[in-house]
Image (cartoon, rainbow, N blue to C red; front, side, top):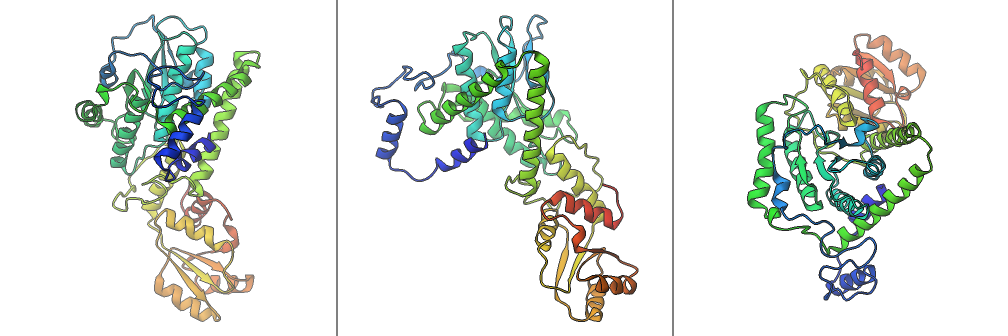
Length: 410
């Protein structure tokens, strides 16, 4: 699915209308795009609406109907609470509902990627129609994997785009977590979050249009690719013999995905505002007690420890810049830790004076063992560590090292 996400961005390169029209017609198997109104032009592409719902405004309902014990909800939680890639999640739910009773409901997590989320819900609607299961309702639920404890106002923006993508994609209901659910999770937070749906209903006109992005080359193409990806996974699942094997398969894929996402966050190839870039310096997490439940929580849990320690770091160089210095600097920058890097010292006395002037909590020595030993004797009131004790690739491991060397537990 990562290549699908990359494709989303590549589709935004400037293109003339006539070029777009030719590309669209090619996708639609040389149909005359001007004459295509509402017919299905291929097995996976339709230009009008891939779902049939007369009351689009019901997407904005804030109250779920009274619980009916005869209605069964299906979701990824039938298998695992782990974070999952979108195509794995949908394939797992398609497997679950093959023999589902009439008028069942499926709970689908909204993908944080806006365009991929739209394609996801459109694809689900299409696949349900192909299965002859238009009786199944789709409930879109906001995930917590991209929600920040520290910068809760950013969660309002994330929830708004998530709600829009679910509505545009064709969900029957939208269920949003309170924007402050990682903290207070109070009545006020629920009210403000519900207001997102009210504002969208009153001001966006999304309740007046069915499938507003129908015919968009980008969305139609993404929907098609998403369906193909789900079908490939479904074929793998169909080759498994028991539900236990299916569960093990899904859990394994989810674990791989979580590790992949953590690596992307660490390397800042995946950037989340307020978490690993542009942290709100006014948000002091010193008193925070953050449960480490997902990748973002791991970052913010360390941030809370750093706020309590409020450390300063000095990097003293006695050699040409070590290759390990760059990942240490990235780690310090990611967590807004004040630090200073020296030039190349020739005399230990010069380093001693510079360190005393900066008065750090931790000194990282980039030098040989003799320099390390002499400085430790001269600076016995400071915590010193050799640069080779740090990791060459992991931001989190380097931050854990800083926290440990200063004297706290990770």
